[in-house]
Structure formats: structure tokens, C-alpha cells
Length: 460
Ligand code: SF4
Image (cartoon, rainbow, N blue to C red):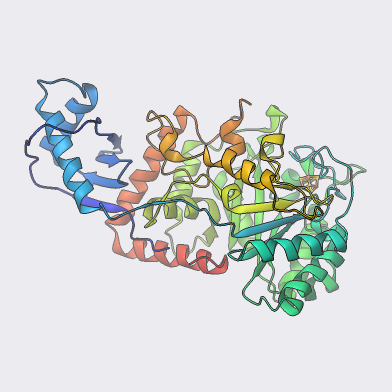
């Protein structure tokens, strides 16, 4: 995926009137931020910087799109028609292939984080570890039926509670099945890392994401063991062990109310000091007192610093900017539409967060997997297409990944990414994209950073 996909025009010539004939109203969103005036066409993913006259006419159009006396309406439709012709070969990107497998190798955890959205690792299920028999059945059947799978991710609970099965699966795939192009990933709480685990991670080049919320004063408030003691010092010591072993890892910080007294710049510096690869994600707890939004100013600063030489690789802003600069228009929502997730009992769902009956895909232990359940679930997923989202969400093509579980949820999460109020953030995203599109040095650094992250994740 390249990073030139954003169609940028500046100071386009005067708009002209033309014949009427378009059946649909043209969709256009105007952004006025920090003295810049931008116009965004969601359907084409086109960002323009109009001149003053164009801006006035576009604004008149937006205020009264159906006004027949409004010349701006005709102008915008003409512009849109031109652009449609120009980019008519572009197809919306819609994943139909299953390309990833998640094995929930443990519905159990050695920790009891207070904000855990996964029921302290159990997902409300029996606390158990996946057996090698189930793992092997899952791997053999999935690779036999879904030849486009490129990545296997081990998840929990705490996946390293079941390190033997992780090693067994990596060996089965790379050695027994000879599939050396498959990449592996583990998301861990970082408390169980031993020398054996370090050598396994190196041997199979496993991508590691390790949870670390910041300094102990913040991390130890929520991320505790069963006896209530904090895990910060152990995690940091284990990260040192990984570093000494030459293992690259990303740190994943869950942003909660306990971060509030901290200046965001300090938090970023702390995480960057631990690893250049870091992520700050809003908390997804059911306990809404822990869920606080990251302020607009802090998110805007993150977007701007993503193109700075010394900023490391903050994953979320890079992902958000890459969705603007992507060549492809993502019609699908998220990985759930291209991934299978297998629980220790063999049951299969698209994602650990989509475990309702509607999405049940069968059981790898059944001889007929994948059965009609699989097809029914995939049909249920197809409903989630961006082109079906109401137009008032003009930024629907900029939100990526867009969690289906969040989108479906009626839970009033403070930072749900798909509310009308989120539009303000996406206006900021376009503002920064416009700045970067016209700044060669920073655009080059952004390109390098996005390509670096994509290469690490084995994306094209
Ligand atoms: S380590 Fe992860 S799975 Fe375990 S309790 Fe904490 S958030 Fe939940």
C-alpha cells in the first residue's frame, strides 16, 4: 500500500457550470481550521484547497444543496463529475479473503487488571488453555480451506500461559507444513517472559505487543496481579530482557483517567524511551469511570509529530494518516472481515469481540468445518460496508480500523470512534494531511514511517 493515495489539488481553476443530470447530490465536506480552508469529497477521497471564490460557492452549496437558484450547486456537481471521470478506474477495497488467524490460546490470565474488557481474560467462558490437539486441528483446517492466510496471532487472556502450544503451532506451520511466509504475533501482558520465550520469539520472528501504561504511578493502578500488587517493575525488567536478547517489541498503553494529570508529551516520551514502537489506545472498559477521551489537542499533536524525525513510530496516528494517504478506499470495516478467531473449545468467530450467535462460524473440531455457519456469519459481516453508513458520517472512509463491535454497540463509550462528534477529529486529520501534502521533508518522513510499519507487519 503506497502513501500517495490522497488526491490533493490546490488553487484549482474557476469552476464552470454545465448540464444538469446527476441524480444524487454531491457529497462534500468543508473544513475550516487554523486559517486554512479545505474541501473534502468522501466518495473520491479527494482533498482540495479551493481559492476564495470557489470556497464561497462551495459554502453556498453546502448550506443549500438543493437550491435551484444556487450556481454553486451546479459548479460542485461539475467538479465532482470531472473527478469521477478522472478516477473512474478506482475500485473500493473489499476484503473477501480470510487472511489472518487468531488463536485464543488461553481464556485465562495471571493478572486481574481492573479495566479488562475480556473478563480478566476469560471472556465470560471457562478458564482454560487451548490444547495442542485443538490448535493443530484449527491450523490444518484453516490452512487447507483458506490459502490466503498470511498471519497467525496468539491472544488471550495471557497467551504466554500456554507458551508450549505457541511453540508447537509455530513449528507445525513453518516446519511440518513448510509455510515459511507466515508471520506470527503475540499480544502479552509482559509478566511471563522467560529466556525460553525470548529464544522462541527470536526463532520464529514473532511480533510482540506488550502492555505498558506508563510509569508505575499510572501502570500499577489498573494493571495488577490477583493479590493486587502492581506489575510495572516486572514488565520493565522483562522488556530489558527482550532488548538484551535483540528482540524488537511494541509497547501498548491503555489510556485511562489515571493518565489525566500527566502531560501527553511526557507520556509519549516515556513510552518512546522504552520502545520506538508504541501505541496509546483509549480504554475499552465497561466501567465508564476509567474511560476518558484523549483530548483533541493531544490527538492533533500526535498526528503532527508522526512526521517528525525524532518521534519514533506512534502506531495510531500513523495508521490514521495512512488511511488518508492510502491508494485504496477501505470499504470493509476492520480485520474481523478477513480473520478467523478460534477459542480453546474450538469454536470460531470473526473476532474475540464478536462472539454472539449471529457471528458463530462453527467449530474446528467438527468434521464439516467450515460449514453453513461459516457462510451465515460471513453474510452477517457483509452488512458492515462503509457505503451503507449514513452520509452524515462524512468521515466514514477515514476511520480505519473501524471496530464492528464498537459500531454496533449502544454502550456510551467516551471515545467511540464513530459518533457525529468524531467529525471534529477527522477535520483535524485532514488539516494535518493537507499540511503534510505540501511539505516535502515531512511527507517523506511520513512515507518512510508508514512503509516501515507496513513492512514490519508483513503488509504489501
Ligand atoms: S493482562 Fe490482559 S487479559 Fe489479563 S487481566 Fe489484564 S487486560 Fe485482561
